[in-house]
Amino acid sequence: MSADKIIEEDTSCCASCGVAAGDDVKLKNCTACYLVKYCSIKCQKEHRPKHKRACKERAAELRDEILFKQPEGSHVGDCPICCLPLSLDVKKSSMTACCSKVICNGCYCANERREEEASLDQRCPFCRAPLPKEGEYDKYIMKRIEANDPAAMRQEGLGKYYKGDFTGSFEYCSKAAEAGDADAHCQLSRLYNLGHGVEKDEKKEVHHLEEAAIRGHPKARYNLGCHESDNGNIERAVKHWIIAATQGHGLSIKALMDLFKEGGVSRDDLAAALRAHHAAVDATKSPQREEAEACDRIRDTMHAKDSN
Image (cartoon, rainbow, N blue to C red):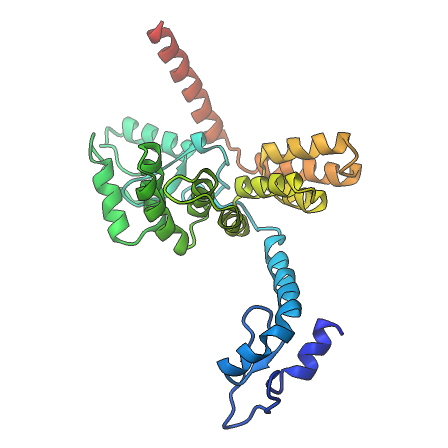
C-alpha cells in the first residue's frame, strides 16, 4: 500500500484503537513519518511494533527529500554591503567583531580607500562602529555572544578549538548549532569524528554533516559524499557532490571528474555540474574584489621580501 493511501485511510482515526477524531478526541500525527495518527501516547506505544518498519522507511524518505534539495545558495550567503555572493574561500572575506557581519574583501578595501581619501577614522564598513583596538577583539565577540549571536558563538568555539580547548569548542558550537548555524554543525561533526571534547560517534558526526549540508554548507556536503562513497553508496555520493559543485565547491568538482574517469558519472551530469560550478564562482567576482586580491598579492610579496 502506498504512503498516500495510508494517509487517506488512517488519518481520520487512531491507528491503534480505531477511535475517530471528534470534539472529545484530538488525534496527533506520528511526528517521524506523518503517515498515521494517534489519540494518546499509550496508543502510539502499543502500535509501535506494527508501525516501526513503515515509519522508519517513510522517515528516511522525508529526510532525503530535505537533504537532497538544492539550496538557494551557500551557507556564507551574500556580502551585506555589495549584496554579491560571498566566496567559499574564507581568505576573501572577514567577520567583523562589532556586529558579526561577514564582509567581502572588496568592500573592506573600498571602505579603507574612502576613509583614507577623506582622512576619516577607521570604522566597520557595515555598522560604522569604531574598529576594535589591539587586544579588544575578544571583548567585542563576548558582547555579541551575550546578545545570543550564533556567528559569534561559533567564532568563539572555533577559537577555542585551535587553542586546544575542545570542551569549550563543543560547548559554544553546540549553542550556535542550536540556533541554526551551519558552520557550527560542521565543526561539531569534526569534533565527533576526531573524538575531541566528546567521544567519537560516527552517527552524530553524519547527523551534523547533514544538518550543515541542509543549511547550504558545501564542504559538509562534500564530506557526506566521501562518507557515502566509502560505504559503496556511489549514487548518493554523486548527488551530494553535484549539489556542492553547483555551489562553487572545487573539491566536489574534482571528485566528480575523478569518478567520471571510472564511469561513475555521466558526461551530461558532469558537464551540467561544471557549468553550474563556473557560474557560482563567477557570481562571487567583482572589480572591487579583484582589486582587493591584487592588493593582497602585493602585500604578500612585500612580506616575503621583508622576511628574506
